[in-house]
Amino acid sequence: MSGELVLVTGGSGFLGAHCILALLKAGYRVRTTVRSAKREADVLAMLKAGGAEPDDRLSFAVADLMSDAGWPDAVAGCDYVLHVASPFPPGVPKREDELIIPAREGALRVLRAARDAGVRRVVLTSSFAAIGYGEMPPDGRPFTEENWTDPTANVSAYVKSKTLAERAAWEFVAAEGGGLELAVVNPVGIFGPVLGSDHSTSTEFVQRMMNGAMPGLPRLSFGVVDARDAADLHVRAMTNPAAKGERFLAVAGDFMTVRAIARTVKTRLGPAAARVSTREIPDWLVRAVGLFNAEAAQLVTELGKVKNATNAKAVRMLGWEPRSREDALAATGESLVRLGLVKTPK
Image (cartoon, rainbow, N blue to C red; front, side, top):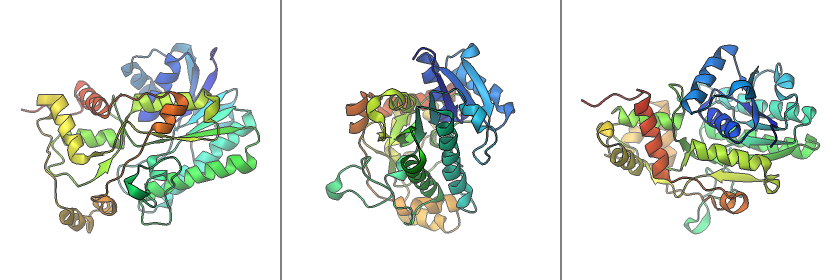
């Protein structure tokens, strides 16, 4: 890599910070975007929590997904771009365009700037959301990279935003990309070591469990991947010639039910997870709550669905070897305890 320069968008985010850590460890120079220079200290604190002292190999650029300003300077001189930044609010937006427009227009803004700057390849962080909300694969087979979500179906604003943003990215590179290459990583729920108080929606899920804020569990299932492994897959997709024009599911093993996740956290964390409930609540109750609560309403269409996805393509093509689901969940809980982000059971 000989000190090649990589731009990571959204370095103050959970996955963005782990991508920076992976790149620094591999010997790259990194530039990362933040929406405000005030966030630079937060990024440095997260990297320190992850065991890195970035010195002069890390630099910052101020840029926002909703503005052209700053992007030419951000990509100048970069060999690669990891476009990780994307809106993912814990709540439900009042209008779906609050998510869709920044995701789609932001991706196009980054791709356009990367093309104009002569960047070799962009790796876009998409999501399982862009794969697993269309027609279910036949015969109970897992979702693969061949599947696409149907954005016209009854899906959440987040699911729609990730699907439309990824579609737009592929269309742009095909029509206007010039020599720019694109690869896409589609992670499931991202867990693993939390690096600060500002973490992800997935890790917040474990935090709520451990704080006793989830006395009952909905009948849902989803995939698990450790942020360190998701970051590793981004780096592999960035440099491997075979990854050009490909998308890769980032998932560690089979999907887990929410109850199985709770049981894993309870078993692996012991006394620190004393507040974790393993009691499922009936579907009718979730539907009833969904009449008054927008977050619960988003869950209703997924209740009881048995989905799965496979990482076979990433393993076969890129030699990716993720750690286990259980280790990813345990690392989440352990880091929350270490950082004092969960209540100590009495």
